[in-house]
Amino acid sequence: GEDVEQSLFLSVREGDSSVINCTYTDSSSTYLYWYKQEPGAGLQLLTYIFSNMDMKQDQRLTVLLNKKDKHLSLRIADTQTGDSAIYFCAEDEGRRALTFGSGTRLQVQP
Amino acid sequence: NAGVTQTPKFRVLKTGQSMTLLCAQDMNHEYMYWYRQDPGMGLRLIHYSVGEGTTAKGEVPDGYNVSRLKKQNFLLGLESAAPSQTSVYFCASSTPDRAANYGYTFGSGTRLTVV
Image (cartoon, rainbow over all chains, first blue to last red; front, side, top):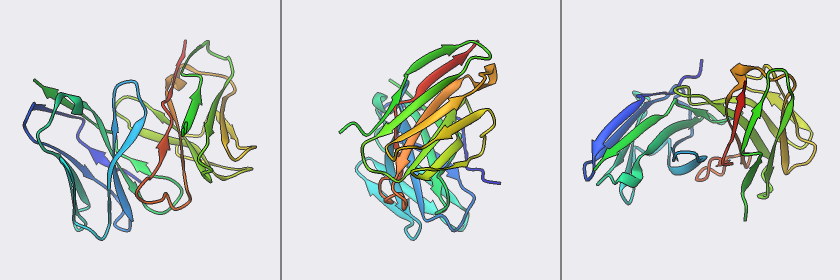
């Protein structure tokens, strides 16, 4: 089956770093994505990583990819209250559609 | 540039009623998708389309039908609504190769409650 797994909840204090983890299923996945969903809104693409990379940095965001363990992580530096949202990882196996994880709710406490 | 537009945004149905959700995109994307989102379960694919006039089943197609008569529109129908179909429905579109750095473009969702 196709299961992308994430922990359901993460709570951090404002200014700390957040690390959201994801395990995916298909070692042949070409792209892996992180999406952000704010309350009452759709999903917005946050960042992505190509499968031949092991790290990508984009301002406060760092994506780490461990292909051997099929593990993907998203690190948010200096987490702000505006980062409170649900974060979804998704894998693209080059087939019909993206497969999404169940989402991690990030709560940032002031 | 509207992107992906879903209508309606909210709807309450009685069990057994029917309705159609409309998704429209203005990006000339070939692929379109319907997902449902339930708490703790992420997004599950209902149906998708790889081009005008073609549709295919996703992970949870039962109780839903779709049509793609025009490239820019993808309709999701519920023939006889059931409480188990209470959910938030998202439409998305993409190019065939997902244009890697863009993945999907999502609509803002339709919140459906079946009582």
